[in-house]
Each structure stands twice: as structure tokens, then as C-alpha cells.
Image 1 (cartoon, one colour):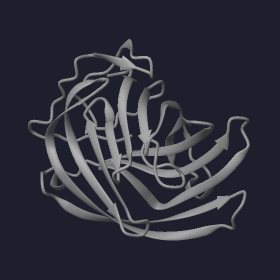
Image 2 (image 1 turned 180 degrees about the vertical axis):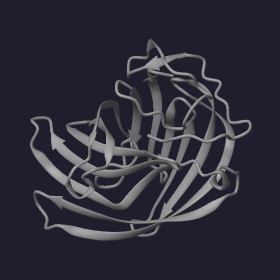
Image 3 (image 1 turned 90 degrees about the vertical axis):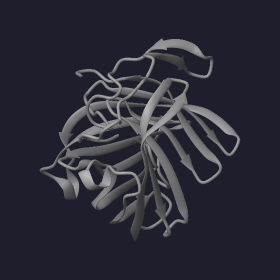
Image 4 (image 1 turned 90 degrees about the horizontal axis):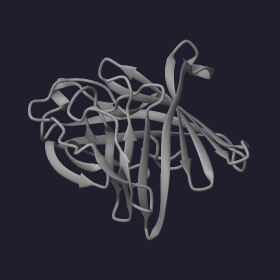
Length: 240
């Protein structure tokens, strides 16, 4: 859901009021590669831009420079993040990406959702990489001043990553965030929605990412550069 461990993936977000940013999802859509109708659970237009609750789940159809596949994310637990973030409670999200499993720990704060820790495993549970973010990698920003079209700001953080094939490395990042729109209509396989559109540019890895978030649903679309697109096919957000 968001960036992968090596770039971005996984992942989810939190609450504030924006005039005109309600959702218009039709409540049903095409899930999976076969286009099988599914019933979506959630309330578009109500609640945080990334609702996090144990049992929530999202499915995406991905086209990565012509390589097409589906990925699924689900919230497994609320637990202590541990390690250097011991004492902080976070939501543990499991994401299946082709032949790997990514585990990500997110924290809900007053200003949105932030990401603290990633692990990548193979399908047999073998650890492939371990990554920590300091102070965090922001997922969503629901600060009032940032929920206005044209708002721009910088998010600074470091990531420390260890893999099975390379020594531990720490890299500093400065992402420039821009709010492109707060009420853009967008249609994806899961339905038609009114979305918050955010673009993030990181010169460290020469990456520009645009994401569309819907209150009560989460991320509905993501485009990284010109060659990677993810679109929501189905979702389940309990407890709203």
C-alpha cells in the first residue's frame, strides 16, 4: 500500500474536516483480475483518509511498466512496534506483493498516519529486509493548512535498512508534498469517488508519486513516475 521496502507500497491514513471532500463510491466494484463483482464495506466521505482498524482490507490491481498483478493488504493487529520504537502502539499491516510478503507498522497521530517499520519476507517466512524510519515516514497529513488545494510542505526523515545481501545503510530524505486537489472525482474498479490528491517528490531517489485518498476508504489510486499504477478493486473497512 504505498511504497515498498525498496521504493514504496504498502499501505493507510487519519482525520480532519475538508469542505467538499465527501465520497461518492457506488458501494460495489470489480475485484481481482477476473472482474468478479464484490461488495465493498465502508462509508466513503466519512472519517479519516486512511481508516485503520483490525480486519480492514484492500485489494489493488497493479500495472508496473507492463507487468500486471494484484496485491492485497490487510490490518492484522494493534501491537507494540518494538525495537527502537518500543512503547509506541501501531497497526500491523500485511501486504502480499507477487512472491513476497511485506509487514508494515503504522501509527495514527493527531495529524494523520505515519509509518515506522517495514519487514519484507519470502512466502516461506524468511526475512529478506528490515527497515526503520526516523522519526517516521508520513503516510497522510490531515493538518488543516495542508488540506487546501495548492498547499506545499517538506517532510524530512531517515530510513535505516538491512538486507540479507547488503550491509546496513541509513539514507536521509526530504520529500516535497503538494496538495493538488481536495475534491477530485476519480473512477477506479472499486467505484467512483471524490478524492484528496497528493503529489510527493523525493530527489534522493528521483521519484515522484501521486496518490488519491478517500475518507472512510483509504488509497484508491497511486501513480509513480510514468510506469507504475495501482487502482483499488475492493475494500472492507469495518467499525465505521
